Image (cartoon, rainbow, N blue to C red; front, side, top):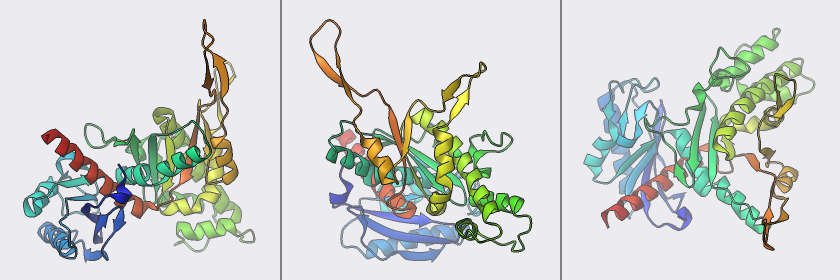
Length: 373
């Protein structure tokens, strides 16, 4: 499915605790100026009216008839059925709110709701980094192609999504890839997000920088300190991001062991990758030790950080050799080095989520049409 040449239109929503931003996408591209409205997070009736009004105003701006509504919304939720559960940042949603069915009744088109981490991964898999990697592999005459991807978002929290063979893996309860709740090898008493989030960077920095007088520094400020060799707390900031990278590397190593996929990182904290990715890669390509003291690689695969061009060239290098099929004269190529790649989002999290929402709607509409025929 080529989303960039598809002429169908899908209405979308970027739902935050403070604001709702409505838009429309055609061919993977926004075709209207987004409409921003307050979320009215504490008043369910007003919030639902705002959502309907936002989609209606967006619909009125376009000539084409939209085929669907598709967007990310906070969980917990029964995403398949469009039912939203109790939300911490949208307190009006309590006890189960049938948001998807309500919108279907009003607009008489299919409505698809998903988690933002899932749609980020889906957007990168269908319209972002995964097709870009496969294209560059083809251009390099590499026989290798990839079809699986795990997407990670770094920001206020630690989110994730998994795409397998072009399909979004949601799980039986619509809560697959909830990576934030996985365990941490560095801090076994905490869940992963406690070491991989904005608040983690702030907490750890103040633990190291005991003489820091400014108690309201944001991660961006701490990043700038880590880049300033003359700052008195430069070492504390560097240690903060190194610990962040070690925690992230531990979680990613576990994810890659299970999924055997390309990994893409997005979200606000991905912009600081130059100060934490060395620790990520050290953890991923590091070693465990057996009870007998023998070294065991953390992953079977070799993982490359392909934001670095020299690493990308190593990643695409053809290491194949020719082997003979036993008992015959026939020969075939065999690459003995399994490899994976980690990289930053090229679309950006917000655009990737929009592209993912668009692609998900097209795919589901196509599937439903096939079932009818």
